[in-house]
Amino acid sequence: MDPVICTVDVALLTLTAEGLEVALLKREHAPFKGVAALPGGYIHARTDVDARDAARRVLLDKTGIAAPYLEQLATFSGAARDPRGWSISIAYYALVPATTIAQTERDEVRLHSVDRLPPLPFDHGDIIGTAVSRLRSKSQYSSLPCHLLGDVFTLPQLQRVYEVLMGESINKVSFRRKMTEMDMLDPVDGQFESGAHRPAQLYRLKPAFREQLQLLERGL
Amino acid sequence: MDPVICTVDVALLTLTAEGLEVALLKREHAPFKGVAALPGGYIHARTDVDARDAARRVLLDKTGIAAPYLEQLATFSGAARDPRGWSISIAYYALVPATTIAQTERDEVRLHSVDRLPPLPFDHGDIIGTAVSRLRSKSQYSSLPCHLLGDVFTLPQLQRVYEVLMGESINKVSFRRKMTEMDMLDPVDGQFESGAHRPAQLYRLKPAFREQLQLLERGL
Picture 1: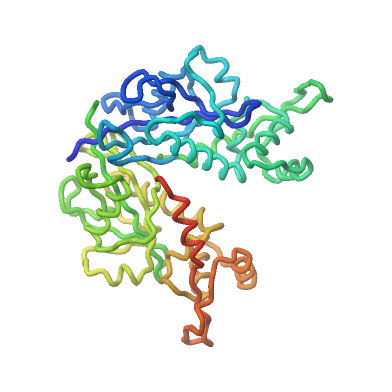
Picture 2: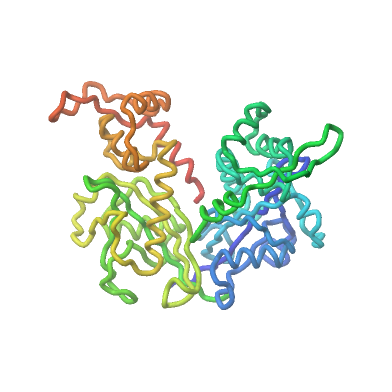
């Protein structure tokens, strides 16, 4: 059995006023020491239950963030991607509200627009590109985008998330009809957000939809 | 760096008169020697370019089949799935017409209905379940099902493939309208299949759609 370098990498995505962004941090060790990269690390076979557990550990260790939504993306592999030798990266993507990243105490975590990435080591550019495609393709028919918002949100906030992910503006009436059809939101009794406009009803995801997403990734 | 067992497994799917079936063959070595399992094997880091190359090699070695459609499914991993130790299986699924399997000279390859599987070693049952779900979910909006037929096929043959994958009967008029909308088929000039019914026009996938599927899996 030939030795293979086994790692996990996590594309942590969030939505800010700048659009869709990914968290990068400078690598502490060679190769590519000091270069901005995805949070990642070796699988610890003696302590990790599985690759998902490794991804959760690495993300928490390196960013201080315990992402509630973490899904396996794809595995990147081969002789050419790492100067140390034949390697595997089991890549995950995670979704968090921007406030979660703003609140982390790790100053070294930096957000970068997915459309304006710095030069990246390994195939981290491909991993981010695949994560963004996956998120965009799933967003058209799922509750996934809600995980980029906090626990409660208004319909205009949710509409903007869909618009950014789908790269196009959505008619307000069509959007509200779609949300009614999908029947995935519960209004939060008596909770409104007030701002420049008139107060807007706050909503949260129905429990069944949180469970549905967990089911989709069962066993991965 | 803790040692990890690195393997690939392939769920080779086809469509027969019995419905959707998967190819299994008896394991030659321990653990689970003699038990029907997916074709799989170790990654050979000295000779495989990447995991996809390993999957292609393993499938050809064990079944004699060079599947034109091979896509990464997911990676299954952890301490519990293999009695030899902490292991990774980068799982792929492949689609071929049933004639391809009938023509292989390897007698040990056996087809099993995905709905009536024997007891399987490791997490091969989960791998097959994930492959079937992926194929079914992608079949509703893609040219993927065409890869379960030969190079040329009639519309009634293609409609049956969609019906089996989607688990429901489709209205013939709606199906033909959908095919016209998708604009993915070319009629083969002057080619008809004759049988019990009147001769049926033969079609093939337009080249752009074969390329589109290849693009979807780029880099994986």
